[in-house]
Length: 278
Image 1: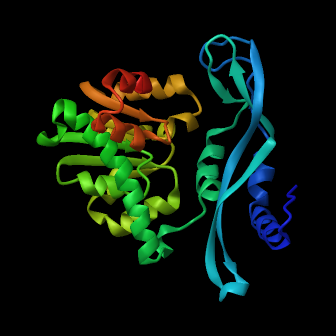
Image 2: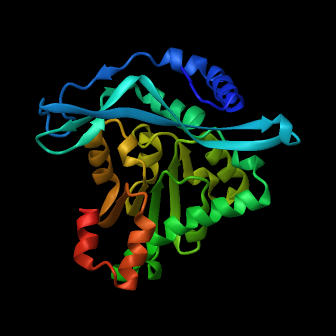
């Protein structure tokens, strides 16, 4: 149910939810987690509702039929909670869905926008935002091991539109995995020289792609680890495809860019940074 004082906005949201009715009806089956997914302890506490993002665009009739993007709509599916484990401190989702749910969710609900239709201004903002995050991670590694001076193999999990891979392709062999189909299609059109190096899939379902292209020197995971259904399986897979002297950056912080800047400015020291990445 949707209750918003702005009646026009209320109708727009309801209309776009109705478009996804099949998704909601087809994903009413799930496994309820009665134990912590890390330590298997049963001493759990419900701390909040688990809200998911609903990112869509729609035509605004009273504004010359212009396209407007709605990126702050959230919903709670199946009345799901976030759980807190009193033993290890993990906060995690109450329900576990089939893998296909996560793939459909990321493409059809989490972000319904199609970058192929972006105008030049929006595309420029999209590129700058993506590259800022990419530079923060690459520059952090390069400061300690001069990775940019070597011919390395890079895998980016959640490679978005391919902006970061395109920037790094002259210095490394680049590969990507992305679960948002519109972004993968954009990547293939705008960066055809490495289109076959990007796999549209969840990381856990990319076995064929990973077996073909394994032995990576650097693996970047961009705000995607929390969406992986089985963290132990994901870590096992990462271990199998990473070279012995390779690096993995798992970025789950929305404020990573600011943290990195503070480190280089001297306001955050190395010990603080190690705590963030530990």
